[in-house]
Image (cartoon, rainbow, N blue to C red; front, side, top):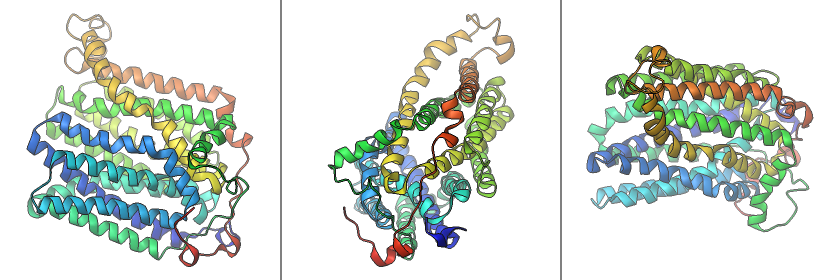
Length: 452
């Protein structure tokens, strides 16, 4: 990185961070409003959950392609383009609502378009941090970037719940459009050093071949492969917990108590993001991942221990407190070890490989609970007389057992990581990338243009 950024360009990073946090808050308002609108009009849980399906699939399908575009384009303009695409889809919602023409299939298409834009934004965020800050601040920066979704999880539902009766869905979407404008203005005044061309970046290949290069790069570094597989396992179990928490709580409590648990989880994520922003993680980031991963397993064990809102809330807070720390250490490793010229492709591929297990978890968690774990813990079930003495017997206690099994698997995975030298020593085996800006660190505001 350019010499001028040895201590970090915190002013530009703060502008970059603020615009994205505000934009995420606006997106949270629209997401809350759309969910309420769909469920109130259809009364269908399946129709409601399809919003999440259409929001998740584009990121998995388009990630390699979007990563290639990030490496080809100026990163500031890539973000502006992504914001513009998201704002156009949001504007379409406003028009359809105003004309009383909005249908369910419109929402699915518009959500998919917005998710496609986010699939471009995500690798840009990670690839921009090394251009603004030195390696020692990567962990803190990642913690700050996670403050956006963390605060959105808490503030957006509260704010949307207060404003929706007054402004209706149209008003929430209009506020979302305003946040897009604000984020675009911050990007227009932002100065991001251009990436100096590297040997890999100068090789002319087809778009699809370039999209595959991310995996080629990772495959040549066994430590990064092991880190990806480790996170794929973590994400599988974490996604299961997201699906199972609601039925676990509602098996013995009412929706207001569920709201308390979800609020505690969001508060934990916010607290963890703040802690990571201040601390920045340990000097060896892999130790931050391996030492805090068993805490994830412990939180799962606490959640499944007894049918208690207090216990489940404490476990959810602990779970989401640790997540930003683990993710922050992971982000810092990738940002330090991957050359800026190929970060878009590599980060997008890493995101795809580490998160493809989440849809699998969504499909498996429910059937496993209904057909396997719940019958085991019913009165007279195979485990009712043994584990039932500890966890309890009846509705939801099979899900509690499922949480216990997942907690033990998480602890075993962390132990395996400690014992596997490729993962434990990856920061020593893989040299840091050379982060260089273009000559004289020419601001993007003076030279940027979207294109190959």
